[in-house]
Amino acid sequence: MIAPLRKRGKKSGKLYVRMDYVESMLNDLDSIAPTELTDRCRRPRGHEGYVHNECVLHFVRRAWAANDLALCEPLLKELMERVRRSLPGFHREGPIRQAELQINEEVFDKFVDMVFAERHAYNERLDFFEAYFREGLAKLRLTAREKTWAAEDRHASLFSEEDEGEIAAEVDAVGAYDPFDPEVLSDSLYRSRLVGAIDSLHPLDKRIIEMLRQDIPIESKEPNAVTMVTVLGMSEKGIRNRRNRALARLRRFLERGDT
Amino acid sequence: MVPSMPTLDDVLEAFAMEPSLDRNTLQRYLRDYPDFATALIDYSQEIFQSQQEADRPLDAHDRARVDSALARFQTVAAQAVPALAQMNAGKLGELARLLTVPHQVVLAFRECGVIVNSVPRRKLIVIADFVGASLQDLTSYLSLPKRSLARSFKSDDKPSNTEKVTFERLLRDAGLADGEIERLLVDEP
Image (cartoon, rainbow over all chains, first blue to last red; front, side, top):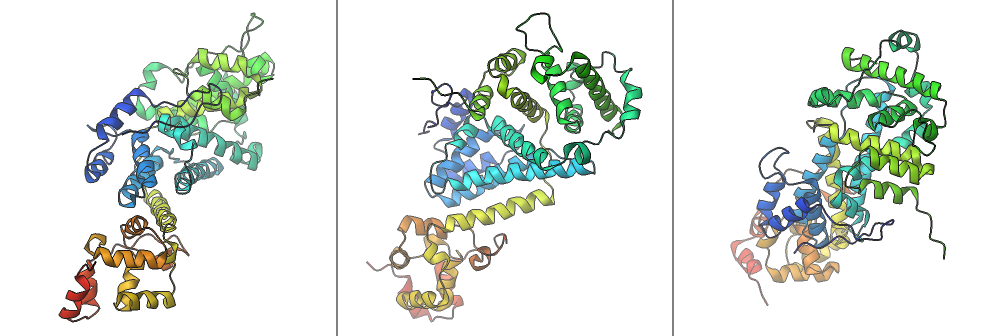
């Protein structure tokens, strides 16, 4: 029997529920033999019978709670390998690469610590991962990233703008450039490069690009509209300038392979 | 009673659980929680990025990190029977005399080097009583892959690749005579 999650959403007060496809897969796998379960969980993403991360985590926690270490260990190994595979790879050199690699390690360590902590007591935070694994890892990345940014002199060491002159020459050519054009976004290699390109931006520029992706306008005549101006507390012109420079940097990275 | 204000974590958690993380959802949260605006935008961006990244192949560093974490797992798991996992030479000798087996046999138990279902149940009960663990905890501990626990408590050494062996094989390797082995394999009540 698949036990329900115990954590309640703090805002809604409702118990967490797994996605339907996760619940359905858990029920299908509930009573198969341990060796078969391990084999199933080892199938790579994209292969028939692939077991979702949320399900692998559920069976790790169940084996851990039952002290079934012989089952827990191979499943945990598989889960940890999946977490490693999902962490971004960074192929460039320099301080950004080092900072991002450090973020990866902090995310991995934090996740592993949460699983190990269940040895002593039920860890509600893992319920979030059983319901929303990807979002859980994204939250760990967010926390680790904020920590890294706070620890670094982000302007001087991480996000050097020494190419300002070169970028300025490219800003005028940005025009209607759209890095999120659905046509190019369908290419997995492009998507991966886009992630690296966005990561190379200054945090403020990343926010502007994210709001651009979400179609949030720079300004609006409607008094209650959410705009970049109201959210960031900057002038329309200042945001427009930063947006254009950020787009120029993205295009340079994506088209020429550098920053 | 005034309801407590949601914390940043509460808001991010609720945001992640929304059925769709599109423009309307982000705008609604930005409007409702202006104090958390930058964190919401950063989180929205992290989630978007995590959706775009394809799995990458594991490299040597990834494997080393997983192996290191697994070594920690074994250490954490061993905490169920710390008295056996951390048993010193004196206690090992005491247990060896109790079981009437050579010292190296109980050492193999400590290092999870024995195939647990090859051990007579009565012997397992004696060990569990001696170390103050439940039979289930002891069985789980002995089911872990063989490793040198003496080293694992001090470092991130990964488990050794050496195969586990049967209880009978342990006794033979310790040089016991056939008659003695036969006596020790009997599961006395």
